[in-house]
Length: 128
Image 1 (cartoon, rainbow, N blue to C red):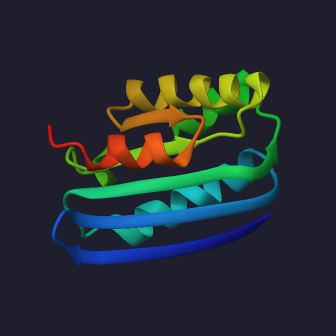
Image 2: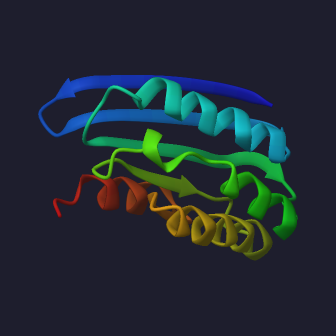
């Protein structure tokens, strides 16, 4: 797995983190991705995170997703932060991320899954 992480801090519309992931990503890879998100955004409020998985391959078992989500610490996620997961448009990949999204939502992490980057960016920049 190859990760590229960019932080854009202090912009007019808040703080933004972009993570581009390539290659094969297993559940440990998702742990690494989210560990990087937490470490990068811990001190930031109103942070918008885009996790681009369009060039990644993954096969996530529901049990692994549940265990992963149950070990996330919601106190590290300020309620104003949001995460957009951008999937490969293939139905299987998208549905795996939707399962992950449900578990993240159950942990009070604001997130959504998208099939394209433009829609994800629009969602992240909406004012609630």
